[in-house]
Image (cartoon, rainbow, N blue to C red; front, side, top):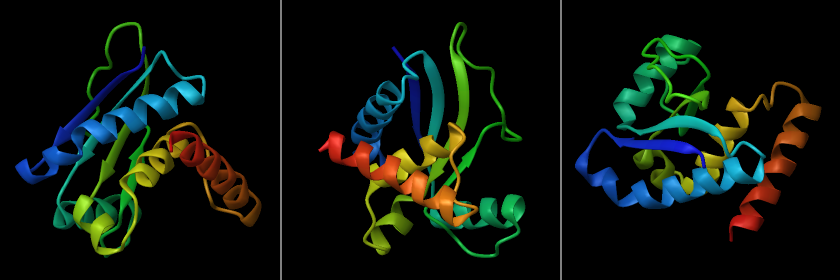
Length: 137
């Protein structure tokens, strides 16, 4: 079984914790990564803005960021394949009428090597995202 930690930076984010955990575990299992682990942080929009500026050079907030090895890297659980850390801003996601499930899936796909740098890569990643989200529902 995967080892997923969901850490809430604010009390009001705790309402997302269970659903985020279930989506992450389902996604890892579907991708054949059941023995993998990762950390998901639910953070404020200003915190996300600062992360995006510091690590991507973009002076705006965003919905989700994935780091395969962040500066705050923690030791992974023993025996698990640590994929990395995902940061999600629930406020940004809500304000832009996006889905927390999609952000979790998107973040995990990034940690598994998918990206959207080229049109071809974007299409491949979006296809995987759609398939996983449809299976989740």
